[in-house]
Amino acid sequence: MSAQKPSGVGNAATSGFLWLVFQSLAARGIGFVTQLVLARLLMPEDFGVIGLALTVTTIANSLIGFGIDEVLLQRQKTIAQWETPAFWLSFGISFAGMIGMFVFAPLAAKWYHSPGLTGLIVAIAIATPLRAVATVPTARIRAEMDFRFLATYNTFDIFALQILTVVFAAFGMGAYAFALPYPIVGALRAFWFWRRSAPRLNRRFRSVQLQYLFGNSTLVLLSRTLIEFVNQGDYIVLGLIASKIEVGYYFFAFRFSAQPVRMLAGNVTNVVFPALAQFRNDPQKQIASVIRASRLLGYLVMPFCFLQAALAQPGLHLLFGQRWMNAVPYVIILSIGLPFDAMSWLTGSLLSARREFARGFRYQLVGMPLFYAIVIIGGWLHGTMGVAIAVAVYYFIWPPATSYLVLIGGGVSWKTVAEFYFMPAIFSAVAASLGIGCAGLPGIRNSDFIQCLVIGTVMCGTYIAFLAVFRRDMMHEILNRFSGLTGKLRRRKQATP
Image (cartoon, rainbow, N blue to C red; front, top):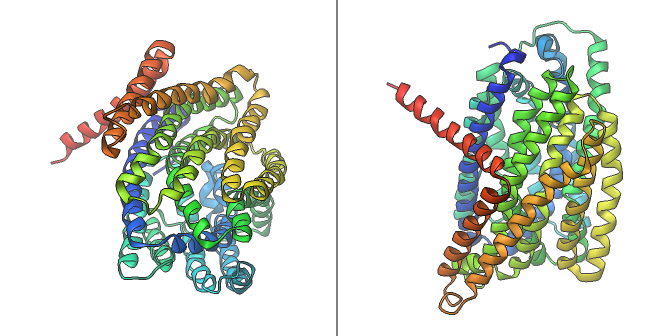
């Protein structure tokens, strides 16, 4: 299949958004159910140990694509000529990354005073070159804007990872239940993506192509590595100052709180980036697309996350009794702070689409030490609670600031950026407060189930009312998107014999 022509980009992006929203909802449901099962099968210490292991493997796994996928998407019309050097460069670096993790695993175990980390890191590291095999096919599929395939497979990917984790946990594998599925799912992904869109590796290539890929990918790699140092920074700090049980409570809370942000923001970014790359000769169209997507994402992700925060106490108590109640404050704090990171994924994609890799790297170079400074101070003052508050404060401040710095060059005012960040946050906060207030009334506060029901009903109703009164255009936008999804699914069902 050839890449979509620019005239079809709008329809392809809209269709892609609908498919990936469907994937997000499915993945959210799968993740929620498996999280509940794992919370019953595993102990907080198991969550804590895997959280520490992921501080090593996640940072190293930022090497998997080496930024080559984004460089390939810049070469959509001639992507076939770049597949061979891109594959061997990506695979070679990822294989070296796996060996590096093998070597570093005992050092990490010693650093965290946890001998069990070595085996966990090795198990996860094996997946690194396996996933790298799918890098070039994934770039081809994204260039073709075949988001239906991506949404379908990614849902399967998430489902397989979660089911395998539950199965291994049920067989008493402890923290290894999280690690062992990675190489299995990585191998399945490589097989399926090659079957769908195998690159041709028999083409001759020139050394200058490797130099180009390596040179342009290096800044993307460095930016991604800094991002992963931020993503894992709270665990790095906690691993040095907190017990494994405390790290486990925090890991459980973060895993629970971050799902809607990462799924919605990641999927919307996957849809928007190829379109932005095709619009690179029309900067104003790029800016308009990013603003529209950021506004839509903000009005979707904020209520999801604030609802999580509001339901944390009665919901976790209803499901687990006292077992995970120590995680409740962290769920509340992180659910309020993390959604402010979502829109910066889109502005970061704008920089990549414009090949402004150095600018993106500079923002990350400033953000990483700022993050660690805030987190270290928070941990020093108030331990695990201080770290959670520091993480929320960082995401409340830095991502909106970088989004503004990216968009201001396109003539976007600070009021526009503030609107898609803070207007949905204000609506969500007021709606959540009303829901919590109603849940505290006599006859309601003594039942966890009724509290959850009241909070969900009041908050959703209030948020929709705010949209109807103050942002009717956004309410129509959201409804049109979802009605388009249901219409497409209904038409496909009718067309199926």
